[in-house]
Length: 136
Figure 1 (cartoon, rainbow, N blue to C red):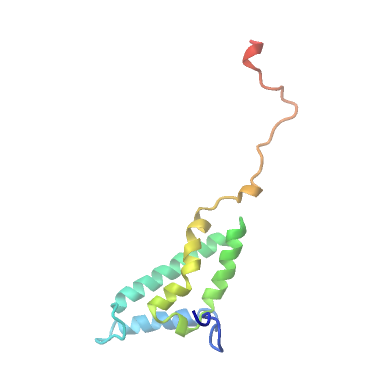
Figure 2: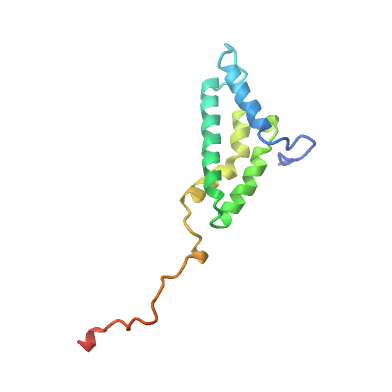
């Protein structure tokens, strides 16, 4: 229960600097015989690249701003993009810090227009009312 990941002097940094460091470290560890982590470096690299691609695609969808979830996603994406290396180099930290953003991805990708903003079907006022079965 302690401090949130943004606390302290090194909570947030330059955009994408932490993710760049995480990818470089994972790529460098693929050539190393001894890795500091129990997970193979190739798997870490695949998971990180997949995570970043998924978040980027969802970010492109969210840029259309069709509802409040898109706005929340974009705001959280800015925070996640500015994470420092200490928050992204370890795979568990990267996944934990991007978990809320990752949970919003299905809603961003599948959201059509927000229900409040749906246009009503156009009705022609000049058209006669529909005939009822009792008129026949």
